[in-house]
Length: 86
Image 1 (cartoon, one colour):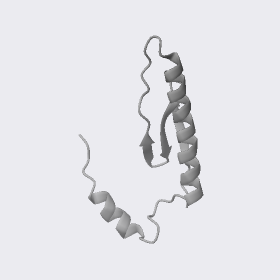
Image 2 (image 1 turned 90 degrees about the vertical axis):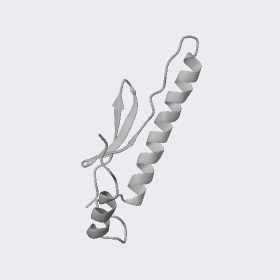
Image 3 (image 1 turned 180 degrees about the horizontal axis):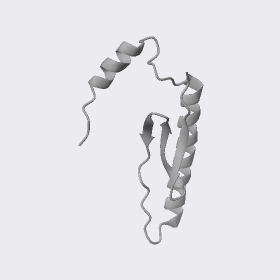
Image 4 (image 1 turned 120 degrees about the vertical axis):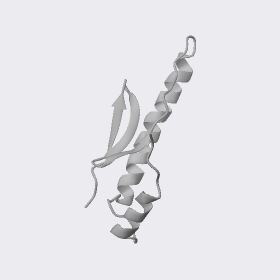
């Protein structure tokens, strides 16, 4: 079963990529300063391009709930190795 991947936007910029289980990626916030509009525009455009590229790459790989060639037990083991934040 393939997860539904989508780009989440906030404030007209890419915020992250998620599926129905949660976020896979977050994008760094682009700071906007006076007299730096061109730099800001270029960085935001680069984020849009990166978000599109990452989404297409994940979809091309057929991202699934199970790790490729590992099975559910390996996914559970991998998840236990990640300490919760907070």
